[in-house]
Amino acid sequence: MSKDELDKLIQTKILSNFKTWVQQFFEGQLVSITKCQRCERRSTREETFMNLSVDIEKNTSLSHCLKKFSTKELLNLGDKFFCESCNTKQVATRQMMIKMRPKLLLIHLKRFKMNFQTMQHQKLSYRIPYPTILHIEDNQIYKEDIVEEETKS
Ligand SMILES: [Zn+2]
Image (tube, rainbow, N blue to C red; front, side, top):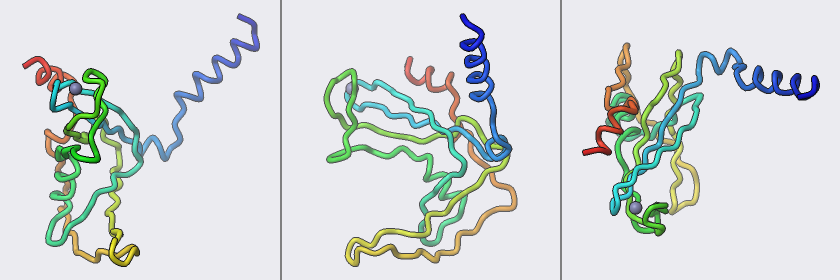
């Protein structure tokens, strides 16, 4: 390996491990878990986030919105999932879980919703109460061993 190649490798390694102070405080990691309903194959995809964007509803709290964020959704009809084991589109469930909590959690309330009748964004002015201390439940936190246990059974 030449000196130039070595310098380039070192620089790449340093830069890939370098995080800005914004990332150090606000970056977290999410896992999207998709499970085929036919063969039960589970696939996971990880992504980093700087804030959590949550849907809001009338007469709900922030805790409820967060719970709903991690609720399993059914991928059905036109929204089916391509399963690599079945090699076809299948009905599946998808769940978002938090793998790594950021030091500071930013939550973005989705206050604009598309109104398909008027084809305009409509502002949702709902009051969303939040607790002084936000508790994220254990079933919203991704743990690899639990997922593996579930797969075995
Ligand atoms: Zn499948």
